[in-house]
Image 1 (spheres, rainbow, N blue to C red):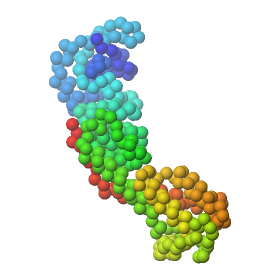
Image 2: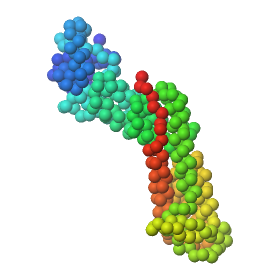
Image 3: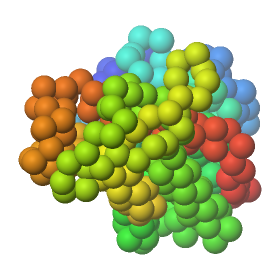
Length: 328
């Protein structure tokens, strides 16, 4: 015994065929709409013939709990009710598109889109999968690799950068369906991103030093390790310019560099740490002034770091070759 689908695919719908899902949900639909959307559906209806009409088309009315008989032919398909409902809402011109957030349903839509050659279903499912990368980047990476979705592979790979290495392991079934090589490629991408960010943070040859420390006079000294050191940096023209920076700043840059080998750059954390470190130089008038009245400089530095790390990551992303799977 089957159950009727929710409106607008229940027994009150205008229909000439019933699609029965694998979990015995009956969808009352029009052949012409499905046939125009998919040549596979058209062939199914043509081949079904009298065979489909011999199937039982009785269902239980959800309101009265009574058995309802139908004279419409029934075509059974292997997708479950949630998947059929989602793809029909995309196919039908009178319904709003379905944008699922649950990974299993998205995967089922991807599979149905390929199976029935429903390009719009595949497109919407891909959009939903890409959106899910923020919350489930590892699983999305595995699925995108399996379906050969290169853009989503890259989106998911970048999203994994916020996760500690120990959170990359998962018992999700999708990870079991990709090769070790494909997963190792993700680890290698993360490693190269970390090294790139670390190298950028350690570099003194960047224009932000001119804005942040460009007017620190030669010979400026104080206690607590604020004695300046001389570095060469670019100014805006560009050309090399000699800049003097406090010794503790150089130490801080190296600390950031070491930290970025293990963790992702975070703007708010960096701002708080920088203000805290500068405030600790309480015997140095200049450092104290910078930490209280020149927060703009700190914000500019953090923004510059973020832009630089993102630029390096984008360059790496363009040239990196991720693993791909043969969809099975």
